[in-house]
Every structure is written in C-alpha cells, then in structure tokens.
Length: 489
Image (cartoon, rainbow, N blue to C red; front, side, top):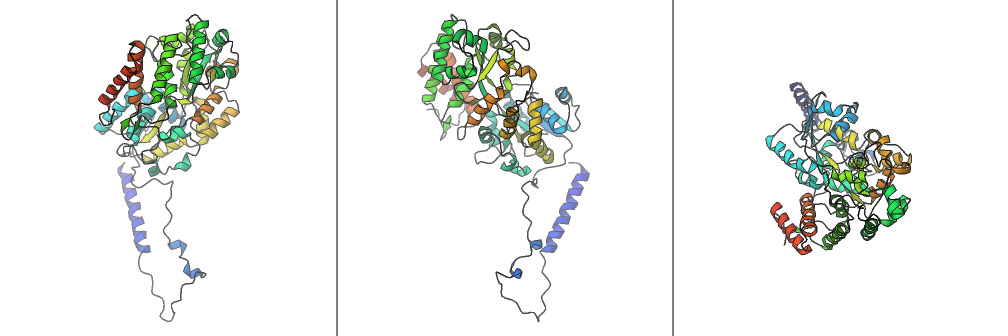
C-alpha cells in the first residue's frame, strides 16, 4: 500500500473513532421539573432513536482486516488456459494476445505468475511461493487438491471477508459449491466453470459397428457400466478387434471414479469397498476384449488422439474444457478425417473432470481487486454469459447456461462444427452437471489416492496379470508411503 493511501486510511479511522466516542458521551440532564415517565410499549418514547442505534454491518463490505491499496494485483496459476481470459473479461481487454501480454508483464497493474506445469504439479509450486513469501493476491486450485489450501486458514481467506456470501453465488452447481467449502462449511473458494463430462463418440463408426443412428439410441447402449462393457464387446467383434469403445483407462477412470458413494477416507481410515472391486472388474473386462485402448492420456507421441483420427477408437470421455482441445484433436482438427462425425451422450454415469477454484491469499494487499475479479468471473451473470460465448466456457451458473443453451447459442463455430447434425453438446453436459453430487465425498487426499488406485489396477492387475488382491496390496502400500497420517489397514 502506498504512503498516501495509508495516511488517508489513518485519517479516516481517527475521524470515525472521534465520532464514536462523542456519540457515547453522557446526555444533557433533563430539567428537574420534568418527572420521569414510566416506559410504555405503546409510547414512541419507549422506542430507541434509530439515529442513535448502531448501524447494521454491511455484509458486502470488505473486512477491515483485509489489506487494500496494493500497487500490483498478483494472480498465480499453472498455465495460461484461464487466467488471461478471465482478466481480459474483467478489465474489458481483447482476448487475442492477452496471454502473451500477461506473461510478458505488458498489462499495467497486474502480475501473472504462470508456472508452466500440469495442474497436478501446481501444489508444489504454490508451497514454494508461500515459503518464499512472495507477493500473491489470488491463485487457482484444482479440484483434486484444492482442499489442501481451502482447509488452511493461513493459505486461503474466507470470502465473506471480501463481502462475498452465498447470495453472490445463488446458481452455482452443487458439486462446485462443496469443493469450495472448508471442513467447517466456510466458503474459501469458488469456481467460474462447471467441468461436467460426457461420452463423445464417432457417430459414423457407431452406425457402422452398432447400427446406431441417433444419440438416444447410443445412450441406451452405454446407459450403465454393464451395458458399456457389453457394447464394447459388440464393437470389438464387429470390427475384428480393430476399434475400441473407450479412449484410455485414464478417461474411463475419470468417469468411473465419480460414481463412488463413499469418501476415500472416513474417520482417518482408507476405504477399500465394493466400488473398488467393481472398477477393477470393469477395467479388466474392457482391457481383455479390446474395448479400451492401451494408450495413455496426454501421451507425448500423440497416440491417444491419433486413435480417433484413424478410426481405431470410437469414443472419448471428455469434459467441457476438452471439446476444443484433445477431443477436437481426435477428429483431426477442423477439416480433419473425422471432423464433424461426432455426437455426445451422458454415458454410464454423471461425472466431472477437472475444474478450477479461485482462492485468495489472506496476506493480500488488494482485497478490493480480488473481490471485483471474483464477482466478474463467478457472480456477474452478464459478464459470465459473455465469457461463456467468447472463451467459450461452460460457466458455473445454471441460469446463465440454461438461457444460452435454450437459445441454441453457438459457443464456438469450430468446436460446434465437430458435432454431427449441429448437436447442442452443452445441453447434454447441462444434464450431467446438475446430476453430480459430491457432498461429503471430498477429502484433501483424493488426488493421491485416486492416482495410486488407478496405477495399481493397471500395472499389477491388467498389465502384470496379478490378482485383484495383489493390486490392492500395492495400492495400500502406495497410499501408506504417500500419506503417513491416515490408517491404510
């Protein structure tokens, strides 16, 4: 905060204090000739003078404990996918070139710390940033590890300290709401996006191998995991083993993991239940029949998305943010070999994949800017609607998205053009987004545990040929090594 602002703040504080002391002083005595009257509930004299009453606290006001007036608004994230465009929306800047301008410190008053790592690696970067004590006002957290910071009062500010309450976010999706609350139910984070996912499939291949001609017919074929496996076998047989129904074990796990109805850790103990065995059986059935490719997500050789272009993979589990990225790549991009041949259905289960939460450093010296930024991204419905169309993004507001979807908004011509017959793909995702319920199921350990379980099933059971029991033992050992504070027996 600069010296002038500190001086003005001090003068204002002293003036308020003087006024408060004056109002609390003794009143002039009443004339002795005036007898004291007995209070009467019907008398206006029995009602305290409203002008002398303590004014009600303004819930929208920034708490006095929050720093304001800093010279530079500093935002941190692991890549340039979102921050630059949210800032552009907030400041009324052009989206074109905004990422480069921020990275090169060409936007006055704003410092963007970009780690240039994957989301899963960002936590270590933040820890280092906090240890170094560098300037930081707002930063972004990924779903799987957000609670590590949201449950730490030294790392995240309660948003009511910025005058932001539930009334500012009345139409957010319930699962995003749950992730933004700490263990005491205090809102520490909020997301501008709803990263609901679906099952996107190549309609041309679905008709060739399954005789399916509409998304409704396809949804019936993959409505639950048993039907998904049965359909995978049907595709494998019809294609002579040349086509898989699922893009990768990683994609499969993103969807399957959201069907869990027990938290991974309960009463500080790891929970290995029937859900775990069910996933292992499903994964093995798909692996053995060729229903899932052996490709890895984000494979550096491009094999993951190349399978879609070549016709060796019928479908991908994809989230809202993926349709302009890897899903489009799986078609070969605009004008590619399979571009325009795809449709989207809900798939076997409602799920989300990813999503990012905005949180505020308690040591911020830019509380006003932090509040404005969050309102623009997560509360102002007009701003959110513009962002949804311009980014494009499935924003975290049911009213905004329902309105845009019902108007058949074309969010991005290139992305929309990849869907057969102009399917309104966001309409499919809206149904899934509203069906996701993760209340009581989120723990700070989810990222580590989910990764360890998936790796153990793949490496020990599917690739290594060992038993499920062997895979579980490996899983437990991985968790015990990574998280020493919970019981894994």
